[in-house]
Amino acid sequence: MSLTLYNTLTRKKEEFQPLHAPQVGVYLCGPTVYSEAHLGNARGPVVFDVLTRYLRHLQYQVRYVRNITDVGHLESDADTGEDKMEKAARAARIEPMQVAQHFTNRYRQHMLGLGCLPPDIEPQASGHIIEQIQVIEEIINNGLAYEVNGSVYFDVPKYNEEGKRYGKLSNRSIEDQLAGTRAGLEGQSEKRSPLDFALWKKASPEHIMRWPSPWGEGFPGWHLECSAMSRKYLGDLSDIHGGGLDLMFPHHECEIAQSQGSHSHTDEARVWMHNNMITVNGTKMSKSLGNFVLLGDMFKGPTGPLAFGYSPMVVRFFLLQAHYRSPVDVSDDALQAARKGYRKLMNGLRLLDRLTADSLSSDVIRDRTVAPLAEGKQPDTAAGDAELRKLVADVFVGLNDDLNTARAIASLFNLLRKFNTLAATTAAMATVSSAALTEAVDAYRAVVSDILGLQDEPRANAEELLKLTLEFYTEAKAEKAYDKVDQIRGALKSQGIVIKDTKAGVEWAYSEE
RNA sequence: GGUGACGUGACCGAGUGGCUAGGUAGAGGUCUGCAAAACCUCCUACAGCGGUUCGAAUCCGCUCGUCACCUCCA
Image 1: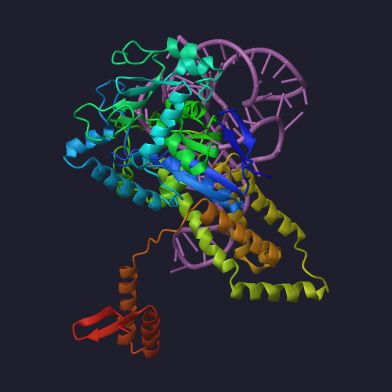
Image 2: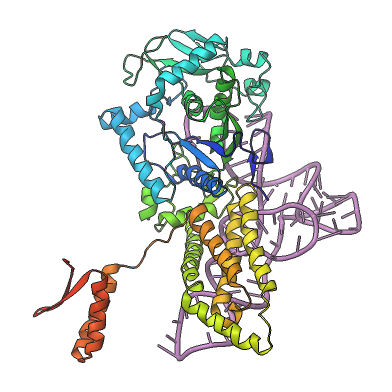
């Protein structure tokens, strides 16, 4: 049983084999930090978080790179195209890097909330201009790029003449692409072919973000950073490269061309993975359509199509309940169902502690020694153990099948039902061995917490609970039930809280000890 | 126009030639001071029409419908 992943490049599920086991290099195209992240921006990070968590569970040494795009994404293909970063900065009348930093901070905060572990390396495009210039020079030296008026373009037709195939990832032929080219392509006069894409763009006088280069002051093209940074941190060829389906073309296609055209001469990554989109009423959530749900708003709610707020963990669970290559539609109904399912799974997590608790074990042991010993036999747990192990195995069948978290979660619920049945009676408990039970309990915990990254969210309000306790305290005192009084006082004291009987009534404070 | 997906029960969402998906909602039951939880049973399915097959929700064809990419987008 081993992990298989769907590779967009081959359009097949492939058994995952690291290039340099036990090391595994994973790259995820990160956010452009010029605005607040929306729900759609969260899917890739969540999926790749589960992927890297699972790879680590499989004992691989993972280097997970997720970049921050803080420069270089043009507003349009036109020569006058303004950088999105700059546009936002201009609107807010602040330093562009301040905008980038602000939204980078927000993004990290949201990702942590969603249970995504920080990447091992989080490189910023603006910090890798030199590396990007170097890649351009390599491509020029290989004769696959040309300079016009301080801008540099990748020569797609030439690239194809050399036996490469621009379009191999998205399965498009050059002819189709040319045929599909739209009419509105003025502003492309500098390009030799409409298929060519910018590696470096000359900065117009009003452009704030600019860097010196062999071709004058300018800024890197929008596909270049990932190629340059992937190579720097993961080598010429990494194991896995991912992003949203909408990045497949042209972004990832261009990345492959750039890597093939540079000294790397590789597809940049062996496995290319693409997560599907999140839709609202069946239509893709996107900035341009304005139908997006900002993560910050979603956690608080209501916002846009949602009448309620949903906690980060509920959102994470919601996303994982679908397979990453399927589209997911957001709605209150779906999220509310997900919330209940999530809580059920979390209650299961708490049940595990009881299942392995000493008190329960001793009961079980007593049951086993009383009943079966009358017949002079050990209890037969073979069937129960086998069932338990099958339930656990099913969970991993799901994970191994192209990271099918939907199947894995379904199997977890089946396992949970078994746990609930076992916990109900000591007789049921006696049908499984403690070894098999411990195994299953550990597996449940590992998958839910470590691999799926689902944590319990405390929902109880401590202050309210404390208030309630003080009411019982007051009642006990009125009844002169002093052992009860002392018991409550002692319990709270062990939590670092002292009760103060004042003339005005009962109050509490944190212990100063 | 080109490329690629998809259409599963009240809602969400897996699966894929014969074997229970799962969650939520609904009905009944066990348990229960009440309730909840838990467990058991049940209900509503594979867009339509043909075809292949011993057998199709699963493969093929057609029809209808929906979506994505081809332009910045996760």
